[in-house]
Length: 378
Image 1 (tube, rainbow, N blue to C red):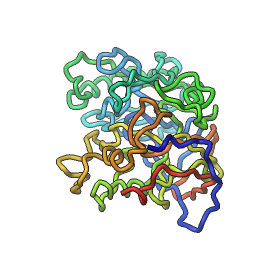
Image 2 (cartoon, helix red, strand yellow):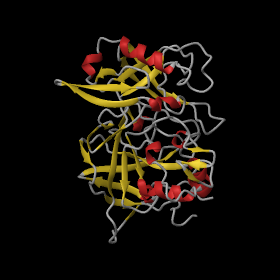
Image 3 (tube, rainbow, N blue to C red):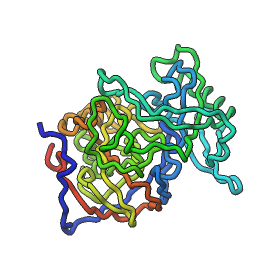
Image 4 (tube, rainbow, N blue to C red):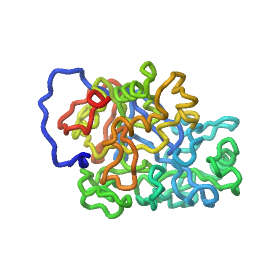
């Protein structure tokens, strides 16, 4: 098997005439694990998309989830049933959360509104869901504040419901679930856990070669400020699953920046590119757990009873299909215990501000060889 792709083997590319890659979709996920919001235009900030994963939910008791650890859809799939939106009330912008048989919940977006609320240190940690030998990982923590008593009652009532609770936790004592907002002035840097200056990391991982910059800041994202996915790769994955007319819904991969107009899997070769004068760098392909096999509006699995989104298929799940078709892209030494097939690319922008809009062209500045492209391996 081929070794991990060396980051130093980067080549300049003379662009041949071809279809122009462009931004096809933009998604912001304000609350970690909850539904995303599709937008046409959105500001870019040092931590990625404005307000992206600036909120998360923590279990303050540790009864059903690890205490004070940010909860993702990996562990509580029904988080995906919580809808999000931003609403304007006079001069104030509020985050609105909605769910089945629950009154809408509205909380402030501005950090100043949280300063008198309970202080909570939210842990950015977890266990691999793809490696049974994982000893867990810890990528820092973020000083945070509770969204208040009303939000706590809302979250505690909804997430303890038997039809919402994580599988296997229904009979455990009820948890105290708290919605928190991270302190925007005390976010993490990717350079703390990747690159030559890393001070912590994933067990077994060797990320010293990752081109992380101190300005690549993260809030409650898993690993990087922005995740890029491709509609072309989603269509190819549908073909590989035998559901030619039904592409893989890339929303299930929870990417912020969704591109199109390029061959399938080519996004993995982009080492440096710019969009509207904002320069992005590839950090690392994203290894996937079982969450991308789920519908990101219901939390249910996409592939049931031999059908994928209503179409008959020949494979079990999207991620199993990727593992079988591209075994060389199912983990490497750099990721350590974060094993799983790659879908999507983590990218950094060194803290640049700007604005992205659907339809903007993507200019690729540097490429590297792909491990394998969909047009090669079938």
